[in-house]
Structures are given as C-alpha cells and as structure tokens.
Image (cartoon, rainbow, N blue to C red; front, side, top):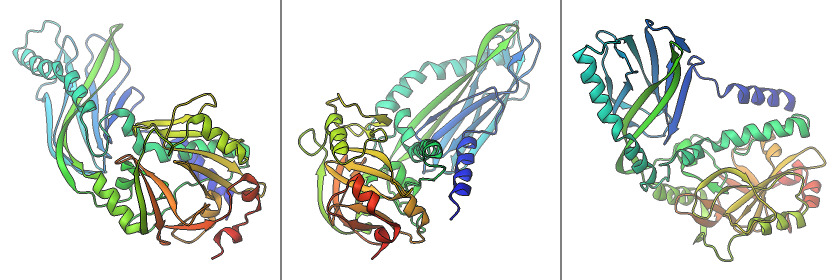
Length: 409
C-alpha cells in the first residue's frame, strides 16, 4: 500500500472538512447533532439596501427531528419583504438531511407598518424565553448525555482526533496514516475500548426511542448597516426522540462478545488512575514520546482531548497516547481503568480483515462506555476484535512485533 498517497488523501480531507456551502459572512451553532447556520449575502449594507439572510438547519443527530419551526429576528428599522413569512415550518427532517430558507428584509425606518410591528412582537415574545429554554435543554438529563454543546462535540471526536494525528505524524514519521477505527461490515465495527453514544449512532445501531425532548437553537451573525453594527439572528425549535442508549450499549456488547465477564461502574476508588499515576505507568513502559491525553472526566463529561499533567491528582476512566515504532509502524496505546491495550493502527490499515486487531496482556478486554459510565470486561468475538496476547505491553515489545506476528493466528 502506498502510504504517501493515503496520507495525502486524508490530509486533503482534513483541510477541506470545515468548508460549508455558505458565503463568508456566516455563523453557525451545533447542538445535539443539529447545526443551524445563518449567512448574510454581504458584510455591509447601505441605509436603503435589501438584506438577504440564508438559513439552514442540518440534521446529523442520528435521529429524525420533528415539528420544526425556523424563524429570523427582524433587524431594527427593517421589515420583512412583501409576502415573506416570519416563521417557516416543517413536519420533520430526516437524519442526514437539511432544511433551507431565505429571509429578506427591507428598510422600514418610520416603523409605520402594522404588519412589521406584529411580526416584531411575535419574534420578540419568542426570543424572551430563548435563554430559559436553552438553559433547560442544556441541563435536562438524557440517555445520550447530548444536551450541551460540549457533548455534541463528542459526535465529532473521531474526525478531530484523526486530523490531529495525521498532521502530527505527517511531520514525525513521514506521512504514515493512523486510522483508529476501521470501516467494518454493514452494521459497523467499533473498537471495544470506548463505546460512545455518538459511536453507536454513527455505526447504525438500532436504538429504541424512549422519550421526546424539545430543543431550541439560536445563532447570530453581525453585519454593518450605514456604519452601525447589527446582528442577524436565526432561531430553530424542534423535537427529538431521546434514544435508550444504555439498552443499545448492552445489545452491542451482547452481539460482539463471546462472554461478558463483568460490568463495573466507574468509581473514584482503586479502579482508575490519576493523571499523575497514568503518566508514570506509561513512562515505566517506555511510552513518553507523545503526550498522554484523556477525553472523559469521572462523571462521563466529554473534555475534547485534554492533555494529562504529571502534577494532577484528577482521575479519568481512560487515557491514550501515540507510539511510533522503530520499524515505522504507528500505534495508539490505551489505559482503560487500570488495564493497558495497544492498537497497531498502521498494521490494521494494511489488513484486509474486517475485525480490529488489538494487543492485550490478557485474554479479556476492558472497555469504557459513556452511556452508563461503566467498564465492561469481555471476551470479544473475533468478528469484532481479535486479541493478540503478550506478557507485557512495553515500547521494547512493540518494537519487536512485526506485522506477521501481530496478525499470525
């Protein structure tokens, strides 16, 4: 396989992944996998200019959203263009689809239009409760713990981590590409080291809805009118089914495990390392070339790949780092609870088998699940994960492991 070509492809993907179909003068906000974007047709306007705002709602939540209302707040001293409506509605937007609308505003300096006043009053009433609704949505509990913008980023974690690793390794090891999760069969193959709500949805898991929740998102984009700054604001309201992620996690383990040895809640006691302990644990095994990072706190809150500190007593359910072996192979080393596992990432990239190969010190695999905040110790099915058992995972041992040794059966 030509790694340079693969690296070039993924680096190009990384650089273009943030592009959108809107103009430069745009703002966006993502919540629960639903993205709201507002885009002005230009950055500045004269006093008599018409303002056009394009608004888009993109549903990447993994579930259909229903009862959608999309509206735009009228800028001061403007009114809606003749025939335009204050609110656009849709019955549903399927996951992976979007809804677009255009709002046009005309100057109305004297504010003499009764229609404009009524429209402004309707939107003003709606916006008064916006902060309360957003706060309520952010603090309400759900099985997927996706009610905050921070946890929404959890669904983007794999892409972000892939891009970061690609950029680092392009400089460090000559363009070798790391893929942490192989594309699997139709139902999707995930590394059983960390099962997240976003991962289950991304992999097409059949997740049963148990409740419905109402969400509100707003986003504003600044424009200049006659030298004065105004904000174009869009608001979307919708309902979303809350999936039973704990049931989905249990189903996933049942389908991908020969045996579920134990299920243990993540606790502040002896079953997890502090950052300080985890760094020492890795250093004793020779893994010091790259920073040790974590993605979840003890309460399962997503942290967006933070770097562990050698002075910190904070604890986390799992950690990870990189290792570039002397033969050019690239690995990711994980601590889950107090167990260690290694992913021969570049070897897995070369392999044609559907299952993920991992190196372990035991015949069982300990993994962490965000839904329920638990550790699962399992004997994985070979259709999902193949374990290569070694006495001890160290940098010396990894340097000795060839592709043939890792994938030898």
